[in-house]
Image (cartoon, rainbow, N blue to C red; front, side):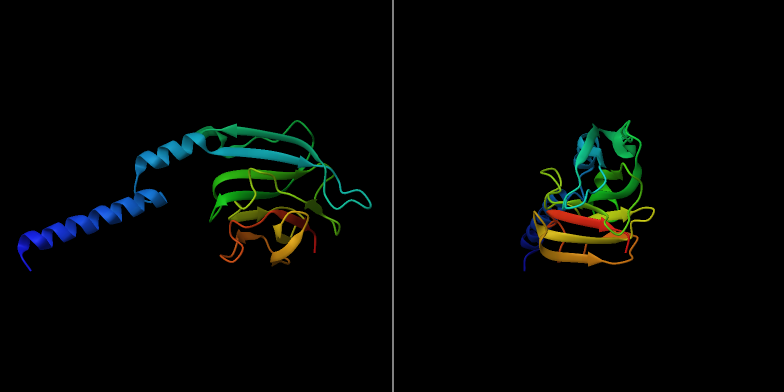
Length: 174
């Protein structure tokens, strides 16, 4: 093979690799800076689950955007941190704190018949707090098609089979 042809193939392979890395966000520092400025972090406060209800009522939802939003502030409603959702693995990327207005989890827990347009098919990792130690994630809204279960867990990455697929969720004390 000629030296010129070999250099051309190496240059082409390098360009393809750089393009793939830039598209996946592992190469371009400009893309990382842009993502930091548009990262949205939210706080959702849920009402206590009432008898006969299958979904907790949302009492408030506040969001902040930008580099300073990584520590989203709780709403003015007195609440207890139950869990945090993350858009990326290892508790990275955009996040939403889920808080309970009536304290931590009990056996009834808190339910999301639909995690919302912002989080539908987007949750990649989570962290549980306090008495919340069990979670079930569903592929469809209204608790359809159980695809993820973790009993007595503390939080983790969603396994690949359920990653970016959760549409409804239940969290409780198991």
